[in-house]
Length: 301
Image 1: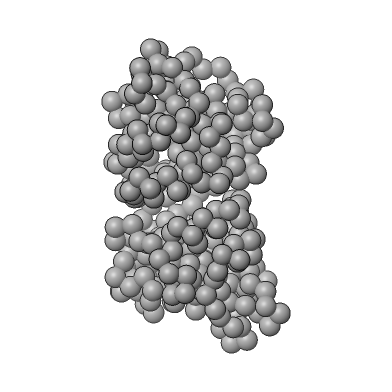
Image 2 (image 1 turned 90 degrees about the vertical axis):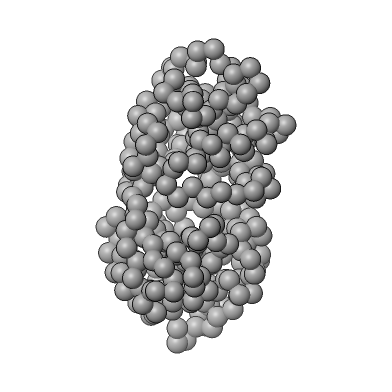
């Protein structure tokens, strides 16, 4: 990275990192809608040591040209976060940052994502020994008057209440346990990233209750657009229309709050029937992205 100086990232960099990652993502064909608070929370909760696990590349004017973050590993996998400013590409920053990340992540399966068709990123990942392990789709839906959906028979749809957080955590874990890439987290870790996140819209979140037991949930977040972060149904309650009814209520409530677009990301091979659920709620595919992995110790550094 000749001509650039490097240092660790700090909390004061969250806004610059969000701007850089969003610029880079949009240039690469991704959504690019991260909020500053998401990087504040990432640096606060998901990085073991900012001094050793983050890297900022600065140009001669002190502006952020590239960034690399190695979050805490979940099991044997770590999801690398990195970006290079579109106007600073071709100078070796991306190669240097990725090589550094893989050294920090040594001994773990490193994961990155790229839009299908993003040839420069795909070539870079191939150079380091990454290969495709999964495809995902990014979807969006206009928020207007969502199609009416019958409520789930015998269940009540209610707003989220903080007193239900621990039961929601348990139902969430059960609903996602069989899905590819699921990461087990402790209750405090899960809370920090979901219902205690600054972007979480608890006023728009909805639960389906059978008596007092949670049968399903939709947890939305504010990224300027409404981001549907988690949709789940207890395994023994699937295919009863619960998720569709919950999504419809969330979109109606979001429309009343002034949101005009909702977005989400879905595993293209999701086995739970999610594609038809989202289609019924008005979501359509915008783009396809791929997850790439390599074992950091075996990568071609």
